[in-house]
Amino acid sequence: MAEKRDEEEQDNQYRAQRLEKLAKLKELGVDPYPYGFAVSASSSELNALYKDLPAGTETQDRVSVAGRIRAIRNSGMFIDLHDSTGKIQVFNHKDKLSAGGLAILPLLDLGDILGVTGLVRRTPRGELTVNGGELAVLAKALMPLPEKFHGLTDLETRYRQRYLDLIMNEDSRETLRRRSRIVAVMRRLLIERGFLEVETPMLHAVPGGASAKPFVTHHNALDLDLYMRVAPELHLKRLLIGGLSDKLFEINRNFRNEGISPRHNPEFTSLELYQAFVDYTAMMEMAEYLIGSIAQEVLGATRIPYGKNAIELKGPWPRKSMAELVKDKTGVDFLAFKDAASARDAAKKLGAELPKHASWGHALEGAFAAKVEAGLIQPIHVTGFPRDISPLAKADRSDPRLTERFETYINGWEVANAFSEINDPLDQLKRFEAQMEARQAGDEEAQPLDADFVLALEYGMPPAGGLGIGIDRLVMLLTDSPSIRDVIAFPTMRPKG
Image (cartoon, rainbow, N blue to C red):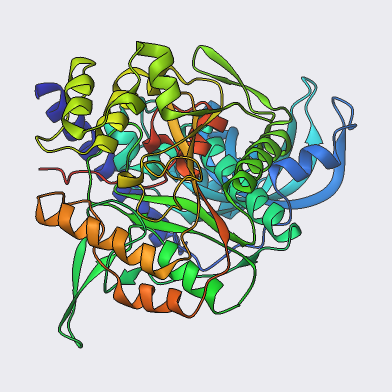
């Protein structure tokens, strides 16, 4: 605590000094927060344009550059500006700098955003440089940056003050830029395959489409409680029913009132898509195509490092049922159990944590989570999900206890989830009714009955496959990031104090 107080006192001293410099700038008639600055080139553009300029060469090419001051040397003679594309060195000499620039120079600090107009040259040591002619303060920073040589290493501060993290850490900037490229490639690949991008509501009267506890809000004008969506599934299927397109997708946020962990954030981004006239096997191929193609295009390879592992994302990937994987790992065959009690007892002996009246399907899922899930490092489609935990998936054609559903696991995480979608309204109603019974028994994540969705199904929905991919976890994989907070610009945090 004493160390933190010392840091705060030091920051206050630095801030007071910067406020004095701010006042002096204003006395000079300098607006320290102007409306704009005409930038003519970025760092990367300059380096590309002058890549062949020999050391020691001066040009007559005048450019205007801007960036944040990250280093000041020799009383301002040398300044390193960093823009979003890299570093620009500025050389300020009294014989070349304007009178206004000379007056501004001693009032600059690390962290200030500065505009410079001058001639391009390459120093005898080979550094591409702009000779400062005119200086323009574009934003006077009142708070000091973190100490140069240690940077910003405290995780709590990095996540709470992401702007500081991005200023100080190139790795953090690259992670979020790569996230943008991943989403852009995903969107393009789907559009090229004939999918139509759509948007569906964030506020739902009935929270459905996934087994999850929703956030509740209130609409004042309607005097109505609404729910932040846990999934877009039921609205996307309504669009499929309406014939908007046989191929639909949405990339957007979902909100689940659940715990926070290195793999969970209460708001997260997912891709969800539906394709008419296919089943869940087509969705396996789609997951392999999207993830493999994105890795190849963004990283230049399908074999990627993650932590201590090398993961091969090129398809096809193995397909194994949940019960088969549990049996292979433990020797326990859950398909041999005829009642829920026997399955519960077996799952608990394997270390699964289950509620008192857990169903057969929950017991199998619990055993899978306890003994199998973490070991699924290479990509695999886990099939044969129990019917009682899959209220929106068609029954398996060979075993009615199971469904045509799979989850794709990579590095021990669920990355994708897909079904052969129910299009029988009577079957769907029975599934919802079973979920309502589970809710009444205390399962807060069981899905409520969405009567309007059942009504929509009665008008006829084509057979379809549906696929969801968790974008945050995919970005974690493709950026070798250990926490979901690393790949979300502003993760959910408990307020300070």
